Amino acid sequence: MKNTALTQTHIDLGAKMVPFAGYHMPVQYAGINAEHDTVRKSVGVFDVSHMGEFILKGEKALDLIQRVTSNDASKLYDGKVQYSCLPNQTGGIVDDLLVYRIDDKTYMLVVNASNIEKDWNWISQFNTEGVDMKDISDRTSLLAVQGPKAAEALQGLTDIDLASMEYYTFKKGKFAGIDNVVVSATGYTGAGGFELYVENDNAQAIWDAVFKAGEPFGIKPIGLGARDTLRLEMGFCLYGNDIDDTTSPLEAGLGWVTKFSKEFTNSAALQAEKTAGVTKKLVGIEMIDRGIPRHDYEIVDADGNNIGKVTSGTQSPSLQKAIGMGYVNTELAKEGTEIYIKIRDNKVKAKIVKPPFK
Image (cartoon, rainbow, N blue to C red; front, top):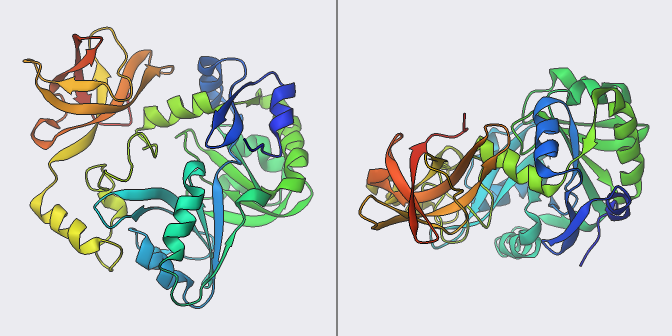
């Protein structure tokens, strides 16, 4: 098991630690509901240093990114971030990721923790034009400072005008007296905020500075449990649950990051799938009767026939109701359709809704 630069800090704060993607990670401190509430209403800090970061550099860096990702990275400009995915050759997804354009020959890819080696090997096999690739995951720490008060809480630590930063842009500058911190207006909570990429050696100093600056705003450390409930309320996909090597980006509602204006891995087959229409779709699920839709629970119709499978589910702390996501046959994917979740052999009534959940 690996530690992040802040593992001991989490233990000292009384976090419940769990193994996640090969790392010791804090799943909760004060409790998932309280932490979720903190991020929705004020500001909280996640240590997500387990995520992977690759630097791609050279004349052909963009060409390589265009070849392996589904979105059109030629639309990026310096300081712009793009959500994308790595399609495989059989219709599924190797991973979803963020693409950062540092300059026209330098890019940073941010990948899921559990897929670092898999993604590195996947991209490397297409690197036939000598792009300089560096895996900086092990020396990079990542803090996600999320919530409506994040900009106000952090502004005193940097000259970067945080309030004016557009969603999915980033700037590199001095932060808490430390040079070359990447401040990114991104996050996976839907609550607004920033992600800070720093060298491991500076992680503790940044963590301490952020908590001191955030004290008047009620800042709290937040674990991975609340990260999951926050992203689920927004309908954001989690790799390994809602998308994987067998799910098409079109089935998963990721057509908006699948651009057929260029050729990429398996683009012809995905284009054909788009033309023909998908047979199943990822949908939002809201329970009508009492029960929580859990990962891998069967979705059935009124007669008990299998029509799909739950991929994520929880009791929503903000909405006080049980919600989830799952794949159902396309003809049943319409908003408002009544479905049933099989919970311990009982059919429990639910309906299909469009995320984000309200």
